[in-house]
Image (cartoon, rainbow, N blue to C red):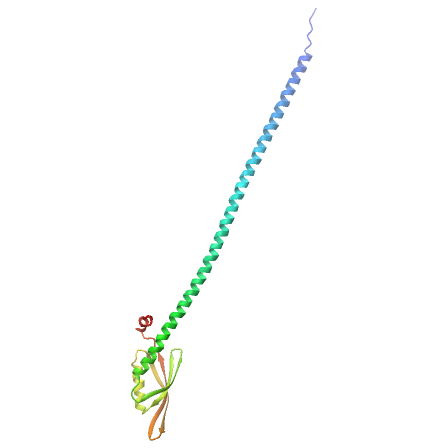
Length: 190
């Protein structure tokens, strides 16, 4: 008699055991993959959030710098305006003393027997009109003006000899160029 062994239940049990192990491995793999994906998702979210915070910080700093650039531009404009005003004031100060110097120099160069009846300044040119006792006195005035440091190129426009009462007088009109005396720059500031 031969013994018969029935291996079918053992094979079936083994197959069930392998199926269960395969299912456990598959579930474990799926869980591990899910954890890896979740970790990657959270890590990427954290990285994106950190980068967004950095971007926000940079945007705020850029806005601050833009504001500072605007303020610097405004300050530069104010500085240029102030410099322009200072230049105008300095020019006015120089011109103020220049006018005084012109009149002072005219009085110093005026020979006896000559007086002015009019003076007109156009830029750096002066138009002088007046009355002299003789033509020689007008010539002396022109020589005096030519030797002055403040005037140059005197030119006679008109001279008319007229009789006023018992005296003969010469009415004259001349032009002279007004120079800025080289030594006047330091004097103008005082």
